Image (tube, rainbow, N blue to C red):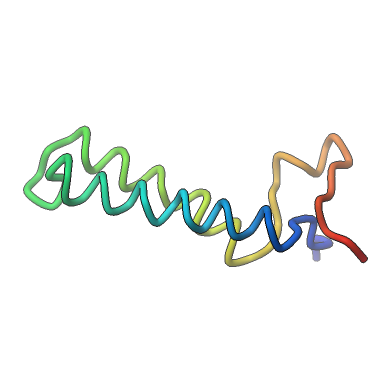
Length: 70
């Protein structure tokens, strides 16, 4: 469907940042206890985690950006 446009470094940085945001949102900001700020941060963390796992960044597509080496 879409051509992968994320390189290894880009995917690694996104995964690390997303995992850190998830931990911060759930545990540091107490999102697991129902704190809305924590749940918002944890929910937003799914974006970099998802794009790193799939290898496609929808925001790169309109600009023709690709960090992947073919």
